[in-house]
Image (cartoon, rainbow, N blue to C red):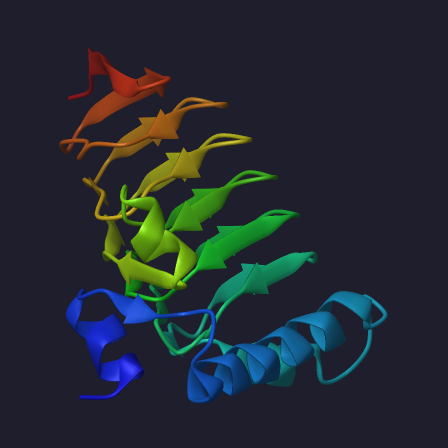
Amino acid sequence: MTEKEKMLRGELYDANYNEALIEERNRCKTLCQQFNTMPYDATGRRDVLDAIIGSHGTNYTIEPSFWCDYGYNIHLGENFYANHNIVILDGASVRFGDNVFVAPNCGFYTAGHPLEASLRNRGLEYARPIVVGNDVWIGAGVQVMPGVTIGSNVVIGGGSVVVKDIPDNCVAVGNPCRVVKVLK
C-alpha cells in the first residue's frame, strides 16, 4: 500500500519523507503561491483555484491568502466564502456544505501526529476528515481539528478551537468549543 493510500484511509503514513506526497504538496503550494500573488482583478485567478480545489459549486470565493496541502481533498458547496488567511491541511477530506461563510484567519486541520515521540520523529502522521454542514458561519480565528463534524445551521464564535463534533442548530464558542445556545 502506498503512503497516499494510507493517508486517505486514515492510517499512519509517512508525510515528511515520502517523495510522491512531497511532490504533490509542492505542486499544490506552488499553485497557492501563484493565486496569492496574482493581482486581485487579474483574469485567471479562478482557473488557479479550480486547479487546486477537488470539487466545488458554481458560486464560491476564496480570498488570498489561501494555503492547503493537496487541494484535491477539499470539497466546497454552493455559496462558499472564505475571507483572508484560510489554511486547510487536507490530508483527509474537508467538506463544506452550501452557504458556508468563513471569517479571516481560520484553519481546518485534518493532520494529527502520534503521541509517541519515536513515531513522530519518523515523520508519521494521520489524517481524519472534517465535515461542515449547510448554513454555517465560522467566526474569525477559529481552528477546527482532525475528525470534527460541524452540523448545519451553526455559528462558531470567533477564536474557538473545535475539537469535538458540534450538533445542528446551535451557537458554539470557546476553547474547547461548546454549545452555548440552541437555534430554532
